[in-house]
Length: 534
Image 1 (spheres, rainbow, N blue to C red):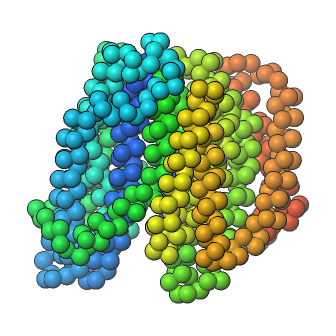
Image 2 (spheres, helix red, strand yellow):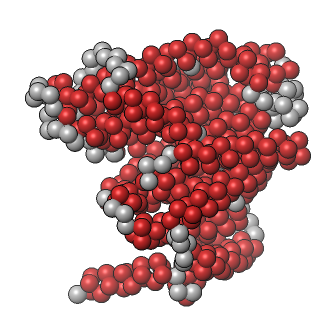
Image 3 (tube, rainbow, N blue to C red):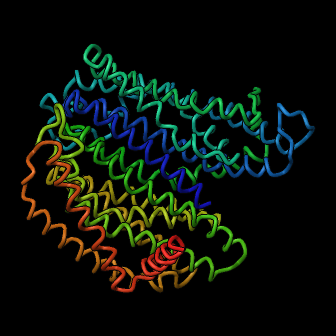
């Protein structure tokens, strides 16, 4: 399991890095101001994709996996009688037909209502200036172009539904690599478009290239799905037990997974009128890429432990696993919070200052990342508690926490947008995520008791070690003082040298403070070293 999780984490990171590279390519080519409406349209579509798709995968995987486990037949193509494989194939036929029909209806409704949805979305309500100097809704040309971009994007939802169903099928068959790499077609499509045709067809062509890449994700997975033996046959059975389960479970699952995505959509709508959507989305993607790739890898290892312990009635094992995963995450994410805050400008100076990206863009991005860094711990803990409740077969508590997070984000964002501008968004996110985590932790403590026995002392040790690390990073940054110049080598040195100095100091300080996980790892490394010498 550890090897599988590690390989999936590496593939996921590389795929997310390719996505960031594609974003960097088109931002450098066009500049952030020209991409304001494009970034908004793509964010809207991706939020819908992620919410609906993740909920779909959440309900499809357990239903399909349980059917596969009921028999050894290969299903429609295997011809072994009334096997679990055949029932699994029929379930897939039903879910593909039903979800596709629902998506087509949704596309038609959204196409008709797009102008209304933009009008009530809050885009530009802050009164901030758009790229041509005005509020999006007050500028007829920009409003019409936004409507056009969203309408053109809607048909891709059909392929997105297939994409997430295919991911669920492959994961149920123990094939994780392709689902982890599924975003690669979209990234490559964008990079090739900018390199070959970007100057000829502009941002509108970029939109079409992005949509083509998103549609290709389902095509990317199809050969592997066919290798499982599955072949689609039309079936529309709303009364099958598996479909009834999916329909009942999809609502709470959708609510549980939508909190962050809905907040992203709302925040992006507010930022649209400020003309800084591209920068905001780029920072948001870096934040998510660097944190969630690590968090998902750790929680993937512990999720089965939660489920097994809860199903067996082993409350001590459940509490210990929950406390352990929290400690492991905090060990790495507390210094990450300090590190992002201290090196925020160096990160973007190295990654982003190319082409039409200006120093002003870098300043905005750095400040956004610094504020987002404060939300690293709440973001991670929410994912942990969500999975801990899912292991109890309880999605309603996470859904309720999602509503708390959404309501708090909207309230704080609206109250601060006129004062802080785009910086209000990470502040709203951090506050809302913290409130949601507090609610989840309180309910979990009431249900299970002392899962945080070691957390208090451990957090103090992590914070102490992180402060020592921060002092070293600040000292090294001061000593460097731009001595290496403003070229690529100089920017790389300004970022890499303080980090290379700070990270070992953090773990050395944690070891000196007696942090259990670091002490045990150091002992294993010493044993491994002695074994190699022999």
